[in-house]
Image (tube, rainbow, N blue to C red; front, side, top):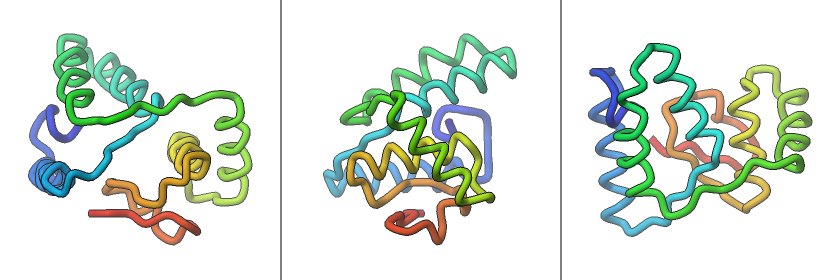
Length: 122
């Protein structure tokens, strides 16, 4: 959202991270919860007109969108109970990562720091 949204302190850094990942030909994946977050945010701030452009930019650079199903949500439940600093949404992301053997996350959120098997790339 930093890439297409209003000015934000992370906007330039987000672009730099994405450009580096693309230049390195890294496989970029996300989960469906991220798309739900985009929907939620733009509806909440009454900028529905920004939803499609944001989806377009996002899906152009993403190689795959991973599903969030019952197994993921159950794993997220276990994760969030064991890590009180994590939000439910972040626990879903971690559950997806663990389910698919993903060890790195492009995120400015420090709550991912220190989680076993997860490296935050900034």
